[in-house]
Amino acid sequence: MPLIKSISGIRGTIGGNVNDNLTPIDTVKFAAAYGMWLKNQAKKEDVTVIVGRDARISGKMVSSLVCNTLVGLGINIIDIGLSTTPTVEIAVPLDNADGGIIITASHNPKQWNALKLLNGKGEFLSAKDGEEVLNIAENDLYEFAQVDNLGIYKRKKDYIEKHIEEVLKLELVNVEAVKKAKFKVVVDAVNSTGGIAIPALLKELGVICVELYCEPNGEFPHNPEPLKEHLTDISELVVEEKADFGIVVDPDVDRLALVCEDGSMFGEEYTLVACADYVLGKTNGNTVSNLSSSRALRDITQKHGGEYQASAVGEVNVVELMKKSNAVIGGEGNGGIIYSASHYGRDSLVGVALFLSHLANLKMSCKQLRDSYPNYFMSKNKIELTPQINVDAILDTIAINYKNEDVITIDGVKINFDTEWVHLRKSNTEPIIRIYTESTSQINADNLANRFKAELINLTK
Image 1 (cartoon, rainbow, N blue to C red):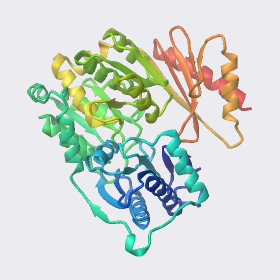
Image 2: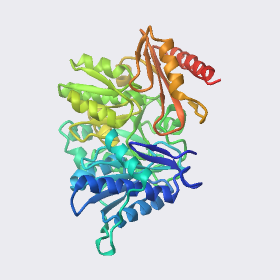
Image 3: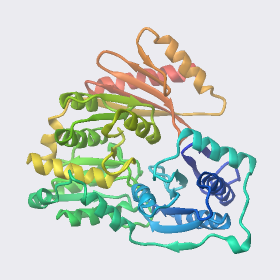
Image 4: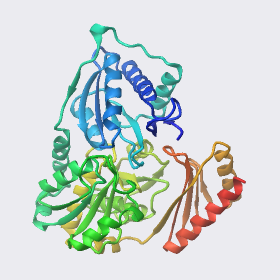
């Protein structure tokens, strides 16, 4: 599997050949490149980096390589061990660190791993900064420390607890109302670090937690991407346990999906919609999501008198537009919640706390809440790429073919029709073209996706 080098980090499968997979050599190379970039930015003697990882099998090995490489550059390491992506994001400013690295491949299967890179604010690198890191790696521009100047390595184990404390302190997290509601919830953490963080948060909120796949051993019991087709076990257990709803997180806990009390999907697209509905009902402001996200967020934002804007796909793009538009909440339709009162990163712990507060405040069931929102239906498909395919040329052709429609080309090609849309783009993390559609029924969304999938395949011949 090709090694994917992007501005947000490096991602690949474990093992194989150097430069083709995420081998130890590639890991060291890109950790060193990030370390050199950070030292150049910091312009000071003592530079500190927070390192955390999800529970995937290769995590300990990759983390050791990263930590020791940075120590070799003279950088001090605070290793917080098993953690979540948002926990590391919060840890960086809390510990006055200069940067952070999360060892996780997010929703990818267990053979994958990655280095996600953070700046001193605990946010993903900008495009410019990411390009500088890639340039350092490409040209081997490293200078390692002399023996007396090696970095200091130390461990800290309590950052998930600190993260939970930060969540509970948020003004809109109504701890007392949630406790009074006496919710019962099933949690599927796909045997990663969400199995540590989410039950601990629920305990503090007085929620009865039924754990499913919460042992952080990295043996994913199903495809870790929180899509409907992967969530049959939790759907059945929610009904069996007579739970109020189900919570699903991906391995690094920055994506949140919900299951209604009848086992039906609340829909990962509607996680952000529900949290935004709650926040906007308490706070005037605007929202942002990416081009592949549901129109439902736009509708809810306008209902509360706010302005909605869409960014290119990618957390860093959403955050940039949130800051420009003074958005109070934003995120991505894959279940990523970014609440600016907390921090500028997708955070499932924040999402869970806001959703529980919303549900407790409304005193309605999860299914009733879902049914109260505008009903859009999405289809998410993909086609595999081969090196011979000129993807940019194909997407350009699609844009030309539909030039009489409302076409947006800031990130692939999005075509807005009157009652539906399609978004075609190259993935930043996998060798695929993603095909996202939304319409007024599932059949229409699926038909639109199949239509464009056929058009794409035809253009590759």
